[in-house]
Length: 85
Image 1 (spheres, rainbow, N blue to C red):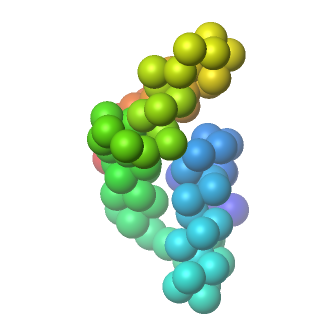
Image 2 (image 1 turned 180 degrees about the vertical axis):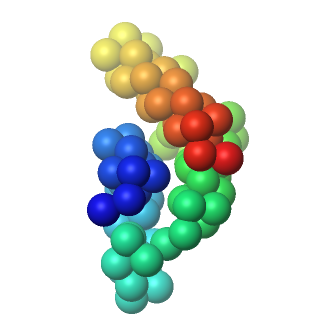
């Protein structure tokens, strides 16, 4: 498995998103290009800044554990995009 795929599936929200689109597209995650996965990482990251999404709700949650996990996901997504863009 290519490194950009291994790294992507280690980010839980990106992994969940990739599993969903791969099922919709009827092809395995391994067949997506690096650019396609980076674009998807950018999309998932954007959901944290859009109001009305579960992602943005998590980021501004009163529950510190949920908020910390959202912040961690954002950090991982930004690092992933920077590394593979």
